[in-house]
Length: 222
Image 1 (cartoon, rainbow, N blue to C red):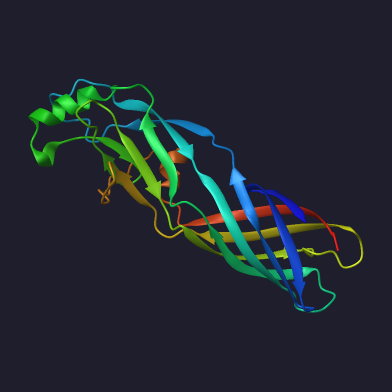
Image 2: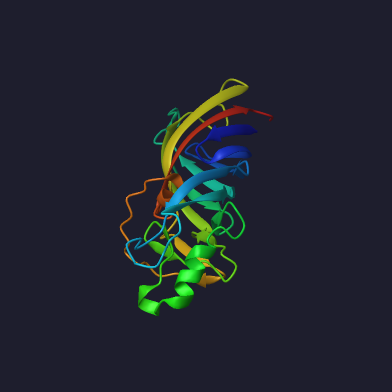
């Protein structure tokens, strides 16, 4: 039985040996439902007729709770070094993004109501353009694959060989696939905006592979 802490969050898992060269682990990891705050820019601010702010405050809520099934592969019977393959499985909705103040984007809505389709503006999120609804609000979801293949290397054994207590350290990567941005359940296409904001929310709209650093404290129960 083990407890883990790292970039996937904290978690609990169980493990068993499969012969001398393999160990199987299964459990879950989660990150508490934390909020991120950032400022996102208005696209094409130079258009005449728009008198609102150049940027607005947004919040993002992360959803990173995953089940995991991992197999550790050891080069020798006594080795503590191992390769790990497996998968993390969880919700596709990774991040919800929305304007902090209700109706705060109404200036953009009013501008777009008078502009042609080609001249409409919105909020830049990575390479995507978010247009507010009739009430001046935006809610978008960043989605990734629900099944995230995993590869890693580490030291330690999930089931200690001699002592009752053991410790593991692991470095690896979850493969999320290309993130997709949805607004009102409609997938948005890339507008190639090339914004220069490197905030956390914009960064997460582009991540395809998530680095994993994990530490595990375990105890042998049989």
